[in-house]
Structures are given as structure tokens and as C-alpha cells.
Amino acid sequence: RIQASVLPLFPNPATDRFTVQFDLPEDSDAAIQCYAPTGQMLYSQTASYAAGLNSVSINVSEMHYTGLLFVKVEMAGGRFVQTVVVK
Image 1 (tube, rainbow, N blue to C red):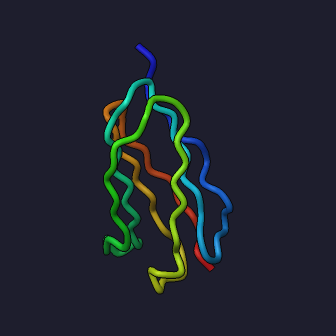
Image 2: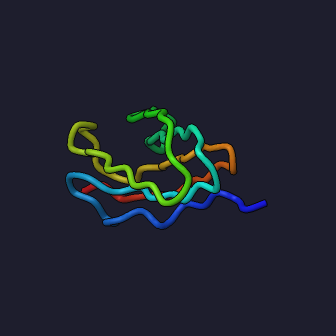
């Protein structure tokens, strides 16, 4: 069985937006959440995505936040956490 995967976030550091890319072995729902180091959730999105490479652009300027951001992507094939610096 082929597992889902997440590619590195870009750009990193980010000033106004960054892109999350993930590869799904089959059509699936995926949840993307962004957290401050304090645990405060600053962004959450769940949607259905097609099999293959998917890209989601996240507008960080709407979060009114600067610093380290934890980005969690959850899907049927696993859970992945990466970090991005917001300037």
C-alpha cells in the first residue's frame, strides 16, 4: 500500500502566505491546522482532495501572527507536522 506524503512547506520563512503540498494515494479528506507554540490554533481547514499531488496556499497575513508556526496535515495515510517561520 502506498502511503500519503507531505512535501516541505514553501517559502520558509514566509511573509504573507506559504504553500502546503501533499501526495495522496487515493481520494481522501485532509485536515490542515496551524498552531502557535503556545498551542493556540490559528488556522484550520478540512476538505476533500483528489489522489495525487495537492497544493494548498495558506494566507498567514490574516493570522496576525509572527514567529514559529506548527503546521499539521492529517489524512487517511498519516499525520505530518512541519514548521514554518512567519515574518
